[in-house]
Image (cartoon, rainbow, N blue to C red; front, side, top):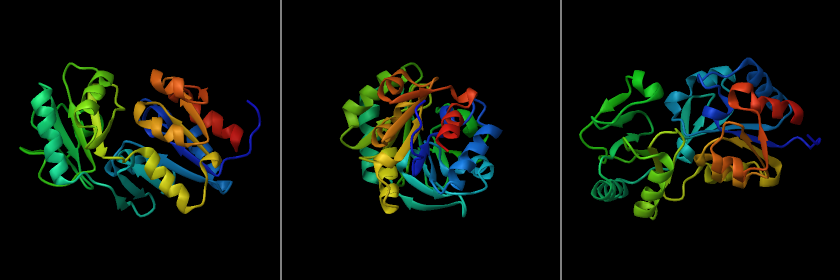
Length: 265
């Protein structure tokens, strides 16, 4: 790899990218993250995860920095463990989106990510950390209050196909993407993406896209990867991501992000 000036900002997705498949941060990656901060550059985690899933990551990086959570909807201070900015889906929009999707896509079930907490319909199949979470509350209606993310799960459709359908039906109301590998679509307020949140954060620090490097693996990372001056996918990334980036590094389980950071810093 050709030697390049160290970027002023490093933005990385977590699950499937900087984290191993078991959800842990490897010791090598922890050290690499530390080198970024020691150099004076800014490290930002840009993730689909909600803040309530950030405890282990925050501990691993000694509670330093800012995380852009819920695909850009929530800005989370890792030091204070507080949400400092929110971009929510309004109740009236939420109701219309759910109504449109129910009327046109048979079999969909929904859940919602709030600023604090998570609620799901009774038929929603919980995955990952939510399966063990006391914060996952079963509700009759997911349209009762504003939320950071609306999630729609289909038992049979693939994620790419379902995203296309959702975008066609309600793309004028919300921004839809996916990141889990199953038929689960994540919807944010219209126009809210990882890129919009990252660009706003970088702008506050007077950091240009050309001074940023970003890492990702799934379609919800594409806006961020397009914004950054230099983009990397891990080898295990979605085909659309592999086709869109400037560079490909090793897989998440092989410390792909750390390998690049060790050369940049």
